[in-house]
Structures are given as structure tokens and as C-alpha cells.
Image (cartoon, rainbow over all chains, first blue to last red; front, top):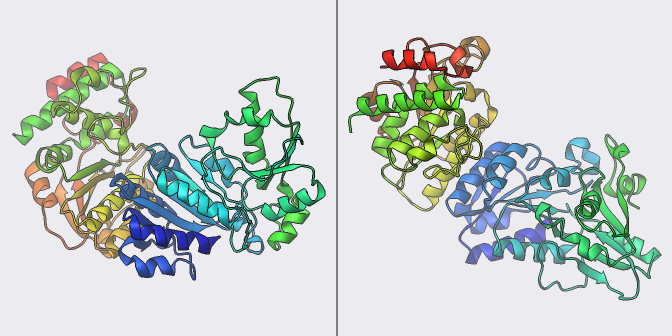
Length: 292
Length: 254
């Protein structure tokens, strides 16, 4: 996903002079194509996330569309207040990019486990979360964010080459991307983020189900979900995040503000909190702590 | 415009609104009046220059200056601190003439660094001024940004420190000593000038000084400046101004 992101950003930055890439001393082997092609629009701020976020705000106030890039929790939790007060409150076009979603850096320990980031980012009213589940959705997310610069969080998988054969044409926040859509069946697997393979396995077990993802979401788009939810009897949500503040919780909350007669049963698959402090590969941790 | 008359007018206005709104931070507001006077009268009339008040709790001084310069009306200023006002008790970007809401310390300088960088990329010859409190320098985010601005030789960035040597509950010296402050900034790669923060001519000269590096102006100020019973007192970081104090202050204000 990282490479797809950079390739796309380099391509777009040739046409769009407002794009600036700022990294927090990370991105070795990934960001060089941008740096080489646009040295005057590439900055490594060092290991300094608050400075990175604030710098992006200043650039955005002057009309640029900065992308701030780091891994795991560094561009989110470390500078959470800059995101809250400066990016989101001022409604500025800064895209925060975090690599290593979920347990992508499983062996590196808890500091590198991005399993609470949805909870943080979904608490900001102007911020759209882009959590693509495969490379095609990365492309679609970027198309949307580049055409609609705004406070945004792009959550990328570390290294898996997640592909779908689906060509995604028009992505926008709140839109469900269907991978299997059967009109007659009333059950659905719905995920966000890099759990495409987990959902694929789940689908193999329940081939009669529908299967969709929701890659662009956030606070603004929550209450509109109820209309779509009520078409289904059962929805299984899947995410590589803790339950609290996560995607399944978000979807469920949409029902509390709408038609109380909605009978849809929502079952959430998420990472058990017991994963905290555990070490291992992404696959090992996922399967042991809730995502087979 | 005469600096002294303008500053006195702003100080009186601060006291008036502080009394009607019963707000805090009066000492912090009076501390920066002369700095704001020079900035707004001399530098910010040029539209390409920008300013961020990072110590957002001293916003009343800024709102009073903006009222004097016609950005907001007297009627709006009188809503300060009242229900439903746009004038929150920290600098707000909803107010004409202000582009960044502040209030949490340590946010202004990183953003100012971004604006200075943007002006460099766009080859704009403009200056970016940012005013920080001394206590605010405890925040690590400032030092991250000073490293960046020095590394990238942001000679269009002017960092002003309101060095009144009192922070929220005690003196800077007894809380988290900043000395030697000038040497700290110098060692980070900045040009440093120290001035009397209530002498407008000297403030102007310092802010207008040429530099090939980020410029830091350490303005030695007095918290509560102009009202003797408020000067150098931690109490007036918090205390609101009752009618008796207000009358007394108006009689002795300088």
C-alpha cells in the first residue's frame, strides 16, 4: 500500500503544485521517488511530530495540501492536540498518513500497534478517515482526497500487497464498496481497513453472505448509515482495532440516533484488548486475538 | 500614530472590558500591549505580513487592538466573554484579522514556521511574527520548531518572547528556569536581540532588524504593566477586576 500511495502522490504532484510531503524521519525506501522529483516540496522534519503537524497547518493556511507521513501512532497520538485544535478545528486540508495499521508492526511491540487510532480520529468532526482495505481502495481514497482536500487520515497497511480485482470508480465518504452483492440475501460482512484477507476467509465460510467495505468514513457520515443498515438482518463488522471507539461501535452508534425500529443485528469482530502487550507477527496476533 | 497614546488607549480598553466581562489574565494582557502596538501599527498594516498570538490567553489585548483598527466593532468587543460571543477568551480564528485559534500553549510557533516556509516556497517577501509567553517555552513543541526553522534558515520568521518572568503560579526562575535564554536560542541557530518590551522605538528597531537566520526578540516585560498594583504579581494572572479596582486602576494607569 505504501508504494501505491507514493506512486500516486508523485503522479498527482506533477500536476498539482499544492501537494507537499512532510515525513517524520520515516519512509526509508518508500518516499524517495517524491523527494527526488520534488525536492522543494519534500521535508523531513526529524523525529518531531508536533512540529510536523504544526508545519503542515501553516502550509495549509497558505493554500498547500500537505501530507504528513509517519508510522503507527506517531502522526496521530503524538500530535493529537495539533490535529484537534489546528487541523480539524480550522478545517484545513492536511492529510495525515500512517503506515502500519493495526498490528502491521506486531513484533515491534505496543508502541507500534495502531489499534486505537480510529477512536482518536473519529472524535474529530471535520476529519474524514480513509482506511482502504486493498490497493484499489488506496487509489480511490487518494482520488477523493486530492479532489476534496480536507482534514483527513489515511491509514495504510505496512507491506501486504492487498489486491482485489475490482475496479473502483467513484469513492466518497459513507459509500459501501460491494465485493459480493446478492439482492436476495440479508446478511453482510462489512469491514474497514486492512482486513481484506480476513474478510475473504470469512466470506469463504459464508458464501451466501454479501460482502462490502466502507473505506471513507468519520463522524459526519455516521448517522446516514442507518438507512443502509436496515436493509440487512445481520451485519458482521470486521476491523483490526480495539472495540472501543472502533468501526463496529461507530456503525452501531448510527442506530442510536435514528429509527429505533431497526432490527438489524450487528456483530463486531475486532482485536481483543488482551492483545495489548503481546508480541508477534501480524498474522499470529490477529488470529490469536480475534481476527482469524 | 503616536505609540504612547495608542498603547494607553489599548490598556484602558483592556481594563474596561476586563471589568465588564470579569475575565482573568489581565496581567498577561497588559504585558504585551506595547509589543502589539508596534506589530499592528508598523508591521501588520502590510497585508503580506502575518502574526500569530501563541499565548492566546492574552487575546483581549489583541481584540482591543483589532477594535481600534476597525476589524471588529465596539459592539462586538463588548460581547467578550459573554454567552454566544465570537470572542472566546483565547484568540479565535472566527474573529476578523486572526487566522489561528490558540489557547493551548506551544501551538503557535509550529504553525508560524509552516507559514514562513510557505512564503519561502512561494518566494514571497513577507515576515511571519509569532508572540510567545515565557512559560510557554516549557512546551517541547517550540523547540522542535526552532530546530526546523534554524535548519531551514527561515530568515522571514520573527519569534517574540514576552519575557515578564512570571508564569501561572510562580516565577519562571522558581518553576522551570529558562536562563540563559538568549544563549539557548543562539545555540539553536537563531539571531537573538534583547529589548525593553515596553519601549516601542526599541521594539520596532529589533523587529525590523535584518537577519539571515530566524530572529528571536526577547522582550523584557512587566506582567500587569501600567497599573502599579498589578505589576509583577501572579495574582493578576487569575483575579478579575471588580469595580473598585477598576476605578483605582483608571486613576493610576500609565
